[in-house]
Image 1 (cartoon, rainbow, N blue to C red):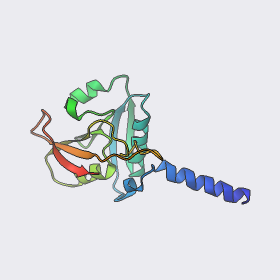
Image 2 (image 1 turned 180 degrees about the vertical axis):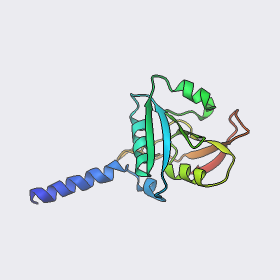
Image 3 (image 1 turned 45 degrees about the vertical axis):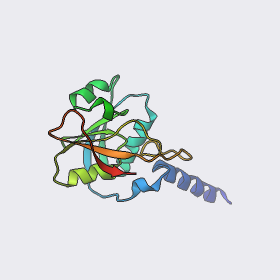
Image 4 (image 1 turned 135 degrees about the vertical axis):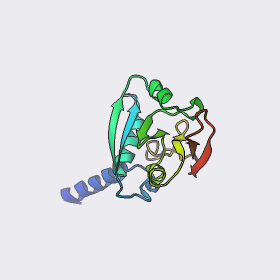
Length: 159
C-alpha cells in the first residue's frame, strides 16, 4: 500500500471509532435537532462519549462541567435509585445516564407525560460505554411520569 492508501485506512478506522463500537447507536438517526444541557464531572470519560453520541444525532450540546453533579440531580428530581454519572435537560425533560439519543428524540416527538428518562448506573455497551472490545450488557431505559416525583418507573426501551 502507498501512503495515500494507508492514510485512507487510518481515516476510515478513526471515523468508525468516533461513532462508537456498536452501530446500533446510529440506527434511526434523524435530522431533527435539539439543544441539550449536560451536567457532568470533568474527570468522566464516558460522559464525553455520551456527548459525542448526542452530537452524532444532531443534538447541540451545552457541556456544563461541574465539580458536583448531585445538586443538579436533586434540583431536577432524579431519584437515587435512578442515578448515573451525568444529568441532562432538554425541552423540559430530564435525561439521566446513558440514554440512547433515539429514545430521547422519540420522547420529544410524542405527546406524553414522561418527565424523566433514565438508564441507572453505567451499563457496559450503552452509548458512551461502548468502546471497541468492551462487553455489551443488556440494559433498560426507564421513564418516570410527571406526577411521580418519588421514583416509580416503567420500562421505556430495552437493549
